[in-house]
Length: 336
Ligand code: TK8
Image: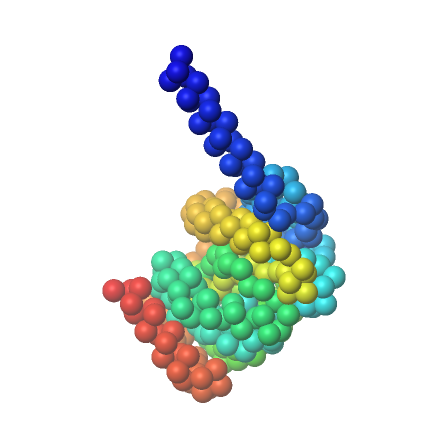
């Protein structure tokens, strides 16, 4: 009996301690609007829901997140603006349009940089990736974590891309920054910058002939309905960044900020795993959907690399040779 009593006393003391900690935590009921560009059935959609559930769970139901897919709160660029102005709390979007605010994000548009997801993870979660996130604060954004968008491949409505020359005359939608534009124009395409939210219609109406994105997106956005040719090029690995409005973030208590960070980290781990699994499945789905798929040969990739070298050199100067040296050092460290 004495032993049991002691146990009960201990249990009561423990639960009081926990309740005390929860009460002491400064967490107010809040509603967070989280926007993203792809549809609900995409890797982004699944990870956004995971983030919302995780946050609600660890905050004891106080921090509620409402997610808005399909660019319903605006394109990546428009949402960036809304976060800076404080009209929207959180979003996930590509690094490419962020380069307009913090030019160094352009490093992720340099072609043929990473060989594997593992190398990308190491750089993004390492010094360089984290330094870039910190640079956002001066612009009114809080960069929390990177999600995987992935290695990008090309689709078009004209013909398979076997050689770089096959890009000649193809009107190709690219993400909105100078490096992406320079790379594809140099490869011979007629590059047209455009927000992702306008892309499906542009492909459908033949305003553009092609686009480039990871196969997970080519599948979830149903580009196979309007693009018969898929060419596996893996020409660039681009990430997504989960961000918060700095105006809003500064009003959160340290406890609240900690919970949001924690949930964001959980969503990152979930999303990368899901993206990699989905990427393996997507190829089969696209084939079944009738896409004609080809892979550019390693020799041709080498030719493409050579062709775009002047663009890489130009932006190495513009982004800073030291930054590019650090980038290459972090990649080779992950590679070996
Ligand atoms: C979605 C975009 C998309 C990106 C693009 O909003 O623009 O092509 O790959 O994922 O961020």
